Amino acid sequence: MAAAGSSVVKRVEELGDLAQAHIQQLSEAAGEDDHFLIRASAALEKLKLLCGEDKECSNPSNLLELYTQAILDMTYFEENKLVDEDFPEDSSQKVKELIGFLSEPEILVKENNMHPKHSDLLGDELLECLSWRRGALLYMYCHSLTKRREWLTRKSSFLKKYLVDGISYLLQMLNYRCPIQLNEGVSFQDLDTAKLLSEGIFSDIHLLAMMYSGEMCYWGLKHCADQQPENHEVDTGVSGASYTTHEETLDFREVGEKILKNGPRLLILV
Image (cartoon, rainbow, N blue to C red; front, side, top):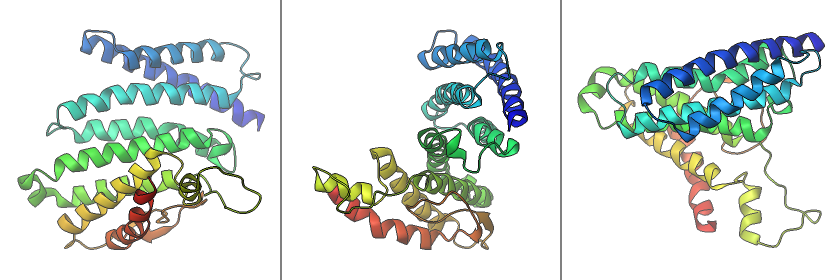
């Protein structure tokens, strides 16, 4: 375990240096200071200082958290730029790059077999945020693509892949934490809030993730219905405590119906 921890520290330091260089390029291109880039750079500077200390004594969890927070801020700056420009025609590579950045913390944990569950090292909130940001990015990208009729006639298969990946990330986000089981041992003051927690809805972002997933299922049925189904690694549960995924075909209609079954009831509670 110590060797794995040392390996994570070394890799996080390398990734931090790469991210810092990328932030520098973004800052120079922007021509002005940006709050998110400044905060990301500050986190990476702190990361660099901690990595400079005795690596055997460094806490991999703390270092990975700093790196993840920096990545979330850095990519948020770039995502905003894409949204402001309504995702230019050549955005696919940039979207792929951002997804890669946001996937790196999970990949790092998995490659080093640090913990049986990612949440033991990264924490549920960071894991949820990483999945949410990837899913929301693909939602916004797909929303832009569905308005381009000529593109859809030529590349609907690409849209399907983006939709499947986006839905998978959003469902993953909804599955990190266990719904609160309401019983005599759980005290609560607001019944509506308790019902939301029992459905695995811990914030407005969780509810938004359900809405985004449902809309993406609709786009899949509308624009990709004639394509052959493909296998993707995805957990189609809308809420629950699963930390594992399994191979199955993502059925837009089936997933959408599950979301619709819970969605209206939750919206009433909100």
